[in-house]
Length: 305
Image 1 (tube, rainbow, N blue to C red):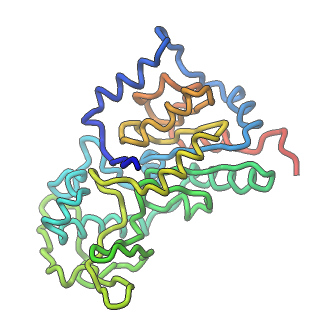
Image 2: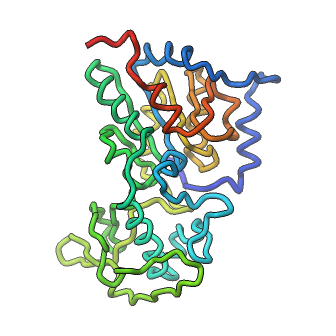
Image 3: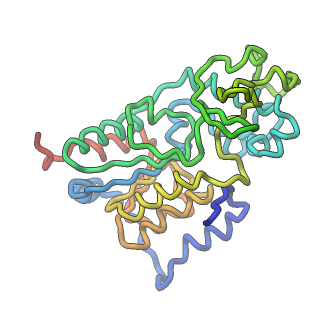
């Protein structure tokens, strides 16, 4: 069995080379931004895959922890999202994730989330499939009403026991008493240094009570093989793919849409900027996803009740 590990392209230059130089191609045309042409293809699509990334959540005011501003206190967020960081200092890592959970409880799905959910429900009544494959861990797609969701990187609102591996949903606020009022992102904030026995230790398995960690995929960890296999099945059978608010630099998701495009399936990118994969796609719609996506997914004139 293959093990697919989460990583950001420090391999980025290599990834860019892969994405920019498809075999047999010398000069690549700029992707189309013709909405009416996209809508024609959309109207005939039976199996639509929608890949979403941090850009969708950012429009709901969710911190993305990407790029130069990607710090929590004085630590780069990516350095906290590792098994080694949790092993060294579980209190600090739990403060970081507690902060993210509490922030998320104040955020709402935006028009892009709602357009995707409405499209799934509407087309589902006509026997057409819409599947969301997301890198986001905030559950905003679920809260918007989407049902067919594959969470590649897990969820902020699930925990996994380090002792027995049991996973469970957890929406408690705070997740444990010791984290009440902790996790402020201010660079001058002091670590709470919470003793391990006061951190989340509520494994539901009889007799376990092991230390819980966020059930998210950290850098250097393997993606869930069942979720990945399901995602690959969806992508292998889709006849239209949308890439929404993703930077196309987090592996392995960065390769999904280019692989779909390589078999001739139309791919439409909705993003605030070009990505390393943009030139591989049929369409690119520039601007906030909450503005560009709703008209793209709205009912087509060929849809009749």
